[in-house]
Length: 381
Image 1: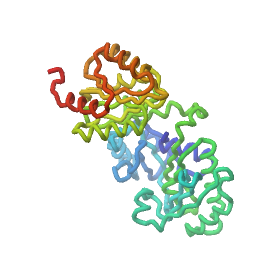
Image 2: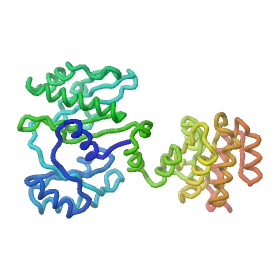
Image 3: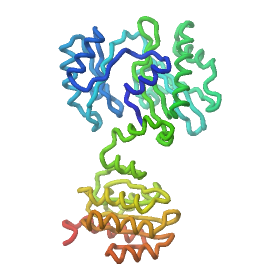
Image 4: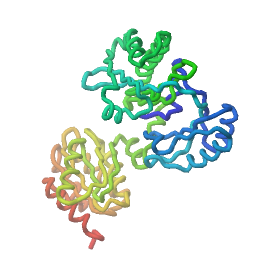
């Protein structure tokens, strides 16, 4: 789960790391009030959960109230990577001597955390690795012991900072580690971490990503996990379903990510276009199956729904009951093609066939039937 920049900075400042003074604004009037409180030059930053705001024009500078008003009028009408800008972070403008990059994240290959540091702050880390691989260093962090104190000395030397800044670096690294541990964060990133003209290290932009699986320990954050999702994606997430919207017209519902991907590939192979990725997961209940099928039946772009279930922990009769419940609730508004095999598949087939649903044992046959139905316009003809 991603946090907005202003939320990340609230956490960062709570742990003693310096951030610019700033105020959140959701209207032009609130922007004006924030500018008056801050005085002097300000930075207006769109609060979205996607990256590359600067390149998209989502960050603007203003020297006067009039400039701030004009900038906020533009920003509050923007969409960045499809996300509407509804709030701005208005901050004091900091005089910068040097921009640095610092992050603490998980290195799954080493089963440990890793500190990433670069002297090139303000650059997307992906671009940094591609264009300037030698400008980025990695320091492995033991997940039990955390970063040792001498890490700050290494970083200060790498950043070419003066000796008296080592304590500031140490405090920042210790704070990042505490955030990772106490918030179950997968990523804490400061980009840029700026050395100000007055000689202080200040976090100009902060990003925190929290492990969704830990939210039962952070109940104050649960409501935030649905932000940035479409209405359909939010509904799917509430029901424990993995859903990704695509551009085709054949709805896909499967159990297991691998099976879902294989089914989508086969649909493409036979000339069809998947409308989505929908994984109900292992051991899905009939209620989850029902909600998943309802999402596809009510999607106006979906012409036909292809269900591919390999019964194991997920019982085929449970799946069939869920499919029938969805059809009864929404109506048989579009064809549903089912490939059902595994635990209790004979019972599941009987339940579905009594309702007039096409059921196959062969995935190839089910896919070909789905692609054929999707090509008909209208499908009932």
